[in-house]
Image (cartoon, rainbow, N blue to C red; front, side, top):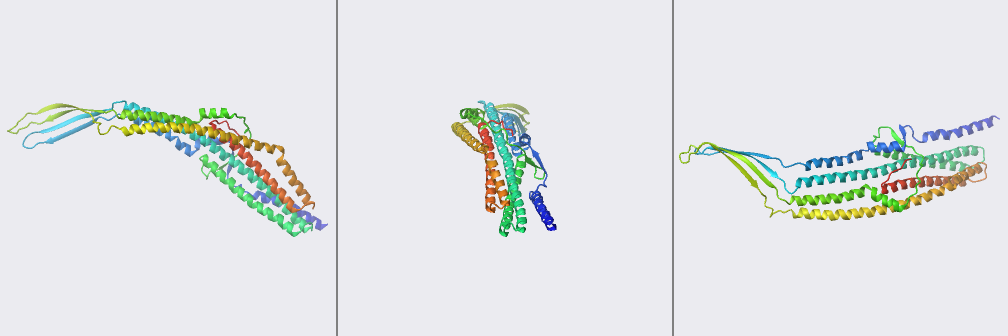
Length: 427
């Protein structure tokens, strides 16, 4: 009777050992905080350092508008000389100013303002891609956590099986080889847990980076249940919407306007500028016996006209014309590229949606029930350990395939909405 109680005590202890070990397998001591998607994407917009730096491109372009408003400064000059032989000293002073003709200042301002609009479109396009990249990173964190849970549950199952086999071996129900095999499989699965844990933590670090959070701070973990990812789209409507919404297409169109402004400025620069000047002369008294003269003053006025036969700025105008042609081709290329990207993203979303529907037929529950049945039969001695291990691997593969397909389905929607230029994702 005493031996039976001893065996029962050993059995109970062995059952609880895997649970204790399981709690110590994954490092959960680091500070972490769960974050939903809405709060996450808001923090990305407010704190992402690359986006914050990118916003300065608009500020710099606006500063260039102020620079374009600058007109030439008035120049003040003064000159004096001292003559020998008592011819008297003289002093000349005056003001000079260059008058810009041909509307150069207006052309500069118009060009600078069009470049401001261009940079604003580019900033919108940057934010569009930032939202998509950040959302994919958020999904990757959830994906890696799901895969970690798969490996943890597998390790728990095999660890419990190894503990049970240790008792069964002592009772003489199984051989030593089977007992060692189950323990070896549990140890192998533990390595897979460590690998999955590393990938999960690395994705958390990347998640904090995109939010502009220091790695010394609390790590944020993605929290979502992957709901509301099913959409019904029409490809023709998506292409039309993309052509109306995509900021990069608007930027390409604005770049054509910038090229036109550059041509106007180049033509304005070909118009000559006028230089005007006015001044006074102060001549001292000359006491030379041959040519004496009294103290006297004079007024001067001048006009300078550049001669453009050596430099008529033909190259600048030619460059502007080529830039216009290049911008027009780039716009057509972006327009064609958008059609291709939307079509590809749409087909990818439709295909992954079909793949997700396959899991609604009970693949997960069926593979789980097979595993549980194999384990039950193995403990009763009706099946071999290899059949249990095969069932465990099959169940793992089905779970991993499910989570990978779920990730592909969700990320396909993110990429589709990125290509279309819409954003209604909330999960």
